[in-house]
Figure (cartoon, rainbow, N blue to C red):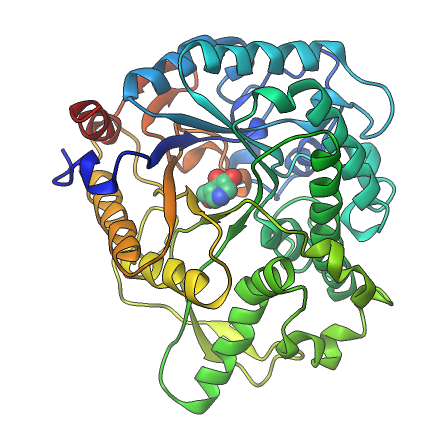
Length: 440
Ligand code: IFM
């Protein structure tokens, strides 16, 4: 049980649970086209145990029971993502009616249960046909995403409570094109620089397309970290500034100020690879938003690494307790980030759109209960300090496909037995249930 009460958050605060299409849906035989994650995960060495999202949690068929869990947990909202290749198998052009029908059923199922739909257009499952044309390295992706956004607006827009364009653009761009850890697995500075700009240009283009269709309540979901120096040495502090620019400021400054941080635009190693004339796109990149989503898991601890070209930084190992992902548990970082965004960037409503931890398998998860309680308190502290935080979404409703980590890393409030697809609520689910039912 949590020691906090729902009333501490005020009457209008939204509690939700989050998932993403590729991580839970399965159901790949209804006309859905291939995505970059299908081929990336099929390539030996990319994903632990060679796991793929082919079956995942079979949410494609089991969605009614999963929505029942959200309702029974007392959650107000469900944050889910549309699978682009399920709706437009080739990324552009022909539409898959079975895909439209699936999301019709899913959204109507939420509304019938009194659950508010919080949608994300893009949570990493890029249609392979678009990767064949260069994917996020190709500027045309702004128009491809824009057309896809128009379709979502036309078919579902009037039933969505809130819509985000992109989930975690840092992962879409840097993790996937410079660090090579996620699909398409590039390790290339030019690919990364181009993807870093195009992902935000596509975001702004999708905002325009959604607005043109009359869709309300639009935002983006950024993954942010609390960047801290390993020591107070000038070198480590300087490394932290670059780390913060790469992880946080590129996206915050771009989307909310219409500029990119000087730490990167003034870095020759990096800046020479940006698309020529990117400055002219910054108005689109920074289209006004109705809300900002922040995904928070941990801090980034930096030390100087002068031997490294371009970005002379390295991650240091901290001494805080860690989750099964090896990520340090640091609730204060969430308070600090929310207050920073509120003070330095924007007064639009903020939502914690993901927060949670991977834990060893089982339905007894006391460490996760503590993790959630500490981070919910961190949200309360941020609100007390003036940040306008309107909601909190637990990641994740279900144990699911944790990308390059496969099924081994479990983030769910609900345990999934992948052999039988049986769902078993964990203690953390019951803790939310206690919090949310008590004061409703
Ligand atoms: O599982 C992911 C999710 O898809 C995006 N945010 C972080 C989660 C945990 O790694």
